[in-house]
Structures are given as structure tokens and as C-alpha cells.
Length: 350
Ligand SMILES: Nc1ncnc2c1ncn2[C@@H]1O[C@H](COP(=O)(O)OP(=O)(O)OP(=O)(O)O)[C@@H](O)[C@H]1O
Ligand SMILES: [Mg+2]
Image 1 (cartoon, protein in one colour):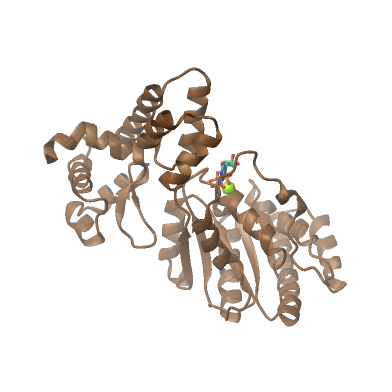
Image 2 (image 1 turned 90 degrees about the vertical axis):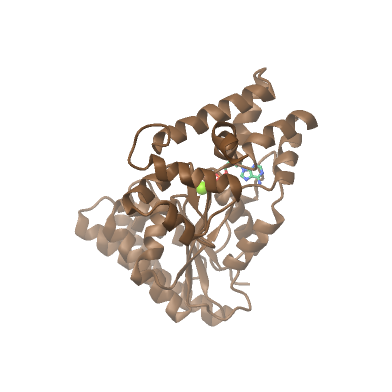
């Protein structure tokens, strides 16, 4: 059987401690598996908190799907993206011969001048297009290209522009579904807002559920009572759960975890200017009060509470408030800031 866009064997490795994420897995499967689907005409942004498990889960799902998905990690130098894509493409088996010439060409001009690099990326994109056409003829479905750490491409405007253009063209033609993976919320909001991205949609991979967070801690050897105390302040934020385990493993207590989480949250409050005399502080405190009454606030209320565009931008800049892509509602960015907000400002609501 021909193997196209094959999953890489090293993805078989599971992290020693792994919590199953059935719902997120199903969402990702829908995104990455084009079997039996009519082309949607869309390309996608997969978002979620930094260190929230996007790469791990995406690689697992790709591995389960076995074929049809090409995964590429954007290099830290966006100018090298063509080369990176080309070497990933080499993994695709059974391609028509002329494509190998393109790889050779692309790889051999690595590190060349700007002009060569640009033509390298476009050569690579047309190679991918040819491979995807062959794949579609054989399998009757589009291929999928996952670009992880996609924010790195934004460092070079021309690279991001070319990739977005290709993504849209391929979506229109039902040839390749491109999925940009990034935790850079501001970038995704900006790209989604651009008119040429009218065919883009976002899929958010959030935190672990509370139950999964408790499972994670249990698997890492944390006793049930301590685990509950930790989750109370970290919620299902994976990075915070990991550092909580470290604190506990070094002899700290759940109270230490709580204290450290609240210190970090306070620093975030400070960064967005909620604790100082900044132009946005009054509006920001109104939002805090509103979020202490309800878990989220809708866009129209947000607009009333924060009329100034400058204040909006400042308040969403760091990790106190966030705008959920799926419904545009404003929420506390994580559990720790919500806990701190309740401790600091909750009395005014009671
Ligand atoms: N379901 C899970 N259970 C246990 N550990 C996990 C799980 N998912 C991810 N991890 C661990 O969490 C860490 C971060 O995961 P990963 O790199 O996949 O996150 P990410 O969202 O891609 O991060 P980034 O935003 O930096 O790209 C890794 O050490 C990974 O092994
Ligand atoms: Mg990642």
C-alpha cells in the first residue's frame, strides 16, 4: 500500500505520564482527518495556552491517522521555513520523480540570499501541491499540513503572507487543509481579523478538565487532598500543574503552591496596569467586578465597560483577561488570576 504523508515513528513515544484527553482528541481528529469529508473551504488556527499540550496531542492524533497529514515545525528563523518544509516533504514516499529534483534544488540553496530563499519556499509549496494532487487522486480527500509554532513565521512578513495565501488557495480547491498551531493569541486574532483570512477558523484547545488535572496529579504521586488544593488554584493549566508537582517534590506544601501561583497572578495584574494609576486601570477594575459576578462577559458588555481601544489592547495584552475565540467572550485568562481577583476585590461584590 502506498504511504503518503506518513506519520513519523518517533511519535509512538508516549510521555511517561499521560492523561487521556478524549474530548480534545475528538476535536483534533475532526480537524486533521479529512476522510469522508467534503472539502470545507477553510483553513484553521489551532490555539491554546502555552505548554497546554497542543503539540503532544496533535502528534498523537496524526500518528493514529497514520497517513494524510504532514507535520512541520516552523524553524526559529522564518527564512529557513522553505528548507524545513522541504526536508519534511522528503518523508513523503512514492512521489513522482521530478519532485525529488525539487527537494535537491531546495535543499542545495539552503542559506542562500533572500531571493533564493523566496523561490525555495515557493518551489516547496508547488512540490507539496503536486504531492497533494496525487494524494487526492488516490485517496479522494485533501491532505493536511500542520505547521506547529506558526508564530515563528510571523517574524518574516513575506513568509507568513505566502503561507496564508497558499492555505487559502488550497482550501478553496479542496487540496490541502492547512492548520497553523500557535499559542500566540494576539497574532491569531489579528490574522483572523484580516479580510484575506475570511476563510480561516480557529479551534481552541483549552486546559485540562478538573478531573483530568486531578488524574494528572495522582499519576505524579500527589495525594488526593493535596491535589484538590492544588487544582483549586491552578485549574487544569498543564504548565502550572507541572510546576506545582516540582514544588511538592522539593518539600513544598499545597499552601506554597497557592502562594506562588498568587504571586505570579499578582505580577500579571501589575503588568496590565490594574494595580497602578494607569489609563486602563478603572476600566480594568470594572471588568474584574463583572467577571466576579459572571464567568464571562459578552462583547457588547466589554465594549461598554472598556470603551477605549487603547485600554482594550492594554488589558488583553498580558495574562489577566482573554478573549475566547469560539464565542468572543472575555474571561479570566486562568484560574489563578480569578482566585486572586476574588481575594483582592471580591468583597466589593458581596
Ligand atoms: N495529556 C498530557 N498528559 C500529561 N502530560 C502532557 C500531556 N500533554 C502534554 N503533556 C506534557 O506537557 C508539556 C507541554 O506539552 P506540549 O509541548 O505538547 O504543549 P504545547 O501546547 O505544544 O506547548 P507550546 O505552546 O510551548 O507549543 C510536555 O512536557 C508534555 O509532555
Ligand atoms: Mg507546541
